[in-house]
Image (cartoon, rainbow, N blue to C red; front, side, top):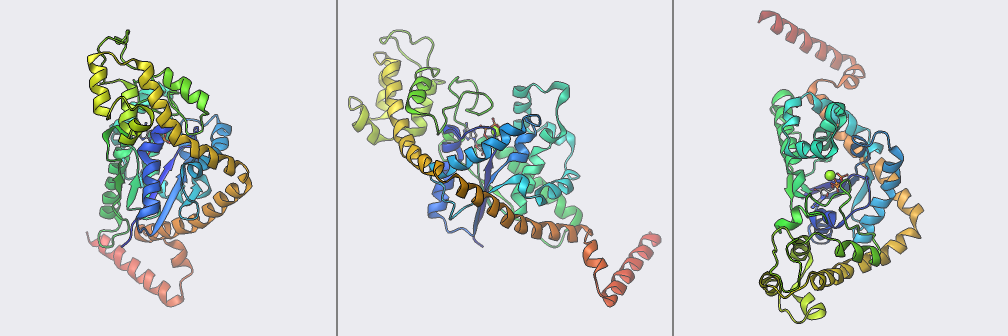
Length: 376
Ligand code: ATP
Ligand code: MG
């Protein structure tokens, strides 16, 4: 069986470098190399509302921004079905059935939820929808039979939750027939790319934390952001020895720098290890390292800016593509939903529209079950 790929992003803002190295780069790699069956990318507006219910316009406006970010970064809409979550109502229904298979305390123990709750400071006003988003994410993954989910490290607990839901569903409703595929996370090989830190060095780069370099930032903004990035606070004079650990500029170099960048932009050093050694010993200033990083990031973002211009000239086509795909994938999710409902015994439509013979069979079967139940 060929793989089915599903992944997504919340339209809470533009995509940033963390999305790129954590997930988008892998999606482009898969799109261009793997012989997959189907590839879906979901713009998760319903999920974004779980902590933005009173700011629908922000979520709505960012749908097109995220779609443009994808295409600018290199996602090919002729190979990948990009769709809008709320336009596939089947996902909400699947979520409803899954919600009965997960306890509140299990969700409260989810490490990503725990961290996000701390950041968001909900205290007593935690929306049920937010706590429940791992369950809705399981529905998104399973509705399309996904086998591979390209994500950043923060999403691993969600994949684990999805596996638990599969087990619970099978145990309860479908012990013989396998309805769902087991999904696997597809992480970036380099640890630093699985969870790129923010410019502040404290948290992961994230839209909500306001510590990101966006794929759509212009050159001037990128330069300003890199110049303000957290380094080693004790590295004051150029001659001071510097620390690499926790130094965001070096984290970004770990994620983006390749050997050939030295020849092009910093020929006095032969490799990243060489630069790190000199920085550690003292004698390399932050501005020099930051300028080097700036050139590397600019090399990545410049072709994206060209494609972005092209997208901006074709906005109507992108909206049309999103609407068409959403309708198409909704039909696919319906098939899974119908299978689930049959396994659960909720296939009323099939029973009520059955022929007389079939109805008699169902009635007899039910009678037998009732008799069996009575004998217990
Ligand atoms: P929000 O702050 O609204 O939650 P976000 O920046 O965390 O936004 P998401 O839309 O939640 O972005 O994440 C989309 C995908 O990108 C997920 O697979 C997530 O793991 C990945 N991702 C997000 N931030 C990073 C990061 N800093 N490093 C690596 N991967 C990331
Ligand atoms: Mg997030």
